[in-house]
Length: 275
Image (tube, rainbow, N blue to C red):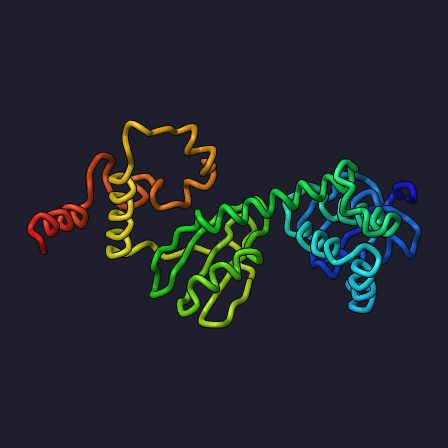
């Protein structure tokens, strides 16, 4: 592997742009000190090189990965691009260099520093997307199902299939506040679009009523003597709670602490009357 060059690559932040950085690295026989997307700040005084996205170059690198390392390696690299791994672009480049040298066996090199770093990052991505399939809570806003999440990784591409199959006839949006993007779905069509600083409308009275009923249901089914906060946090990490209806504070749901809403009270009265 060539020594690190005293240069930093700047690219447009796209996956094809990153593949062009890989092409540049091999063409110039250099390994950059870092690869930075547009929103990253350069913290060193090293000279920067602008790498333009070229479909032809990106295509050559994309085709070479499964040819030299196998389809699993290509999928790993694609997934790694969605992770929150620090310097993920440089780590992907180093992995590809290792893969071009070692071939398909790179996928079994679990103890290698370069390969192991990527495997762990993708494992974290997959685990987070799996958890969110169960932790996402929707609210009805303007006739559509809307949810807000704050994931560490870019999980929306991994959530599309699950929620598309679960709600095929619905209209829904999952807003990723961390990365400023949203998954928009209407029957049999979806798109992931930029959504910086999106401000959602306040919940109306009907939505607040359903939130209160869901909170009441959640509190009612608990078995008090089995209450175990530590166990709950191990299965449901606390960083997800602020976006989950059952953990939302009373003020956020329009309720006073320690009091049920009038909607919940009226609902309970109807139950007593058998209505």
